[in-house]
Length: 221
View 1: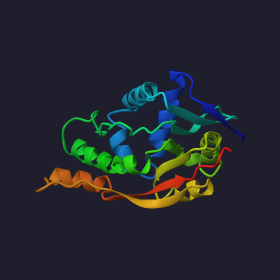
View 2: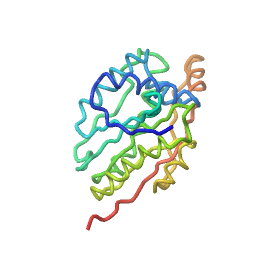
View 3: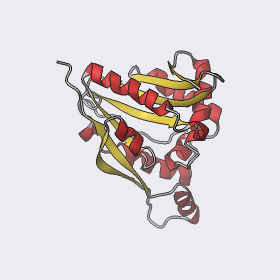
View 4: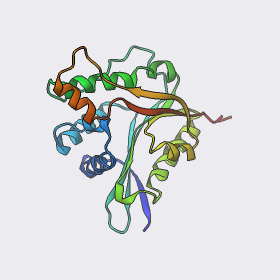
């Protein structure tokens, strides 16, 4: 069954993308997604759509199965044609969560996720924020379609690209020219943690390990 790549052009299509995102990042379990998804798919959809619309550098892609019309994967690429850290950026927090251990842990994990970006990504570049495929449709080429779009764009612009990858996705990114430049370690600790804090931290899989990956720029000359 053939697949088709789309760029997101209207709000109505985004709900199906987020529904697949929720399924994909839940199989297998992903602690960062557990924080990101918020209280419902509807709330998460509205929030991610607002993030997308407020960032002129953001492009969302999605893949459909042409036979069924179903969305089976999605990806967000942030295309920075200038240094995004020329001015200090606010630290991302899990502001959508109510106060409590999950928000407390989420804030610390997002701090760890973004803390090295200003040093590593201080030149124009592309960043993969999300890339996911429904668990029932993996190994069909959906991820490759989305990654080819982004790497072609990077080559067209002569820019390097980055992604913070899970262990599971690492080999897919490597097939598209990315390579590991460092470990990504995320954790949350407090002095004298409560039983609830410790339970939430364990549920999220902390400490969480991933990979910081880079794809070198291709000369446009």
